Amino acid sequence: MQNTNGEPFWQTRFYERIIRNENELNRIRKYIMDNPVKWKWDRNNLENIFM
Image 1 (cartoon, rainbow, N blue to C red):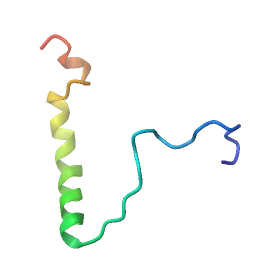
Image 2 (cartoon, helix red, strand yellow):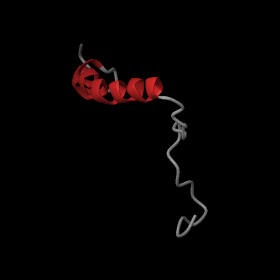
Image 3 (cartoon, rainbow, N blue to C red):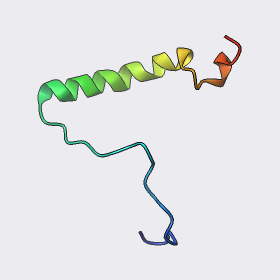
Image 4 (spheres, rainbow, N blue to C red):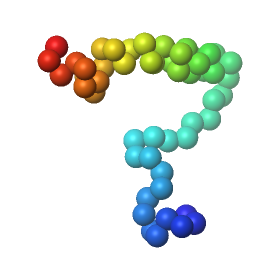
């Protein structure tokens, strides 16, 4: 909390997670690799406002 003046410094809606085994690690890796591809269709992508 150094130099935060009491303001939150952690991103909301995010949390730490312990990766417990190889299968979980591989699933997370796949999510990270596939996620940018899905941005094209994401409702928060401003390019999709008129779709």
